[in-house]
Length: 125
Image (cartoon, rainbow, N blue to C red; front, side, top):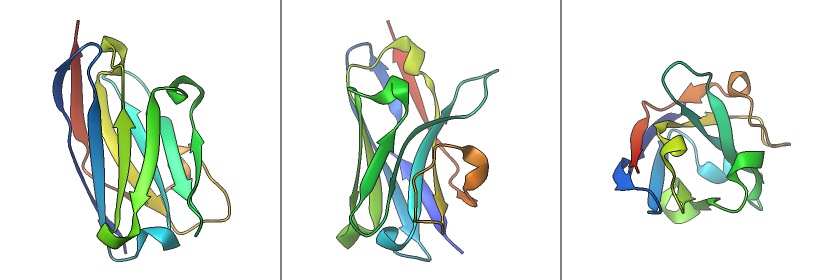
């Protein structure tokens, strides 16, 4: 079983940046697929980015390209989401999730078995 703990959220002004962290335990991050998702009130959870495979291949949601970067640190057993040029539309709870399936990337929430509690990101204009 994998446990995930997110951190790094907060309140920022538009144009600012945040680095979200996802610390994993129960397995090593190079052995699992880790994704970042977000959910704003009244909306469905949407996939932001995922990293998978021993080489750390990545996929990004269409809206995330250019402003979001996913990375991992095997030594710290953690995955990160760097978010730049934040806008109020990025306000949401951000979750990391993990799956034992590492052959392909996925931004579909139901394809992930383990979830963290989330970290809130609030962007003011």
